[in-house]
Length: 102
Image 1 (cartoon, one colour):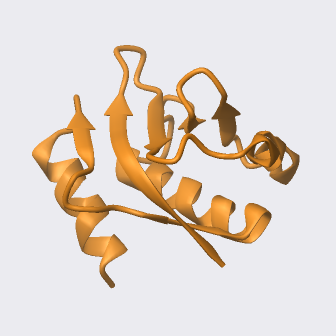
Image 2 (cartoon, helix red, strand yellow):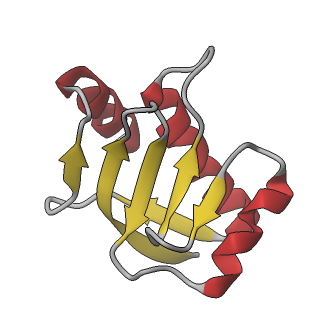
């Protein structure tokens, strides 16, 4: 499984979440929509996006993105010490990091 480093996790004003890749990604990542999991590739930001939460929390959506990327594209999304967190609450960040490390 190929490892992709996450450069930024951002929650926009409209509550959508972006998980931006340090590498800029690959053209094949656009095919993640085929998983029918509400996760999409945004070529302009070079990252995956998820809709505003309805029933799930932002940390649930983050883990869903990671899971769908692994199962659908065969890539492992990894946080690093240099990952930039934008408009992400400390609670959401803690939930994401705790579950990522388990």
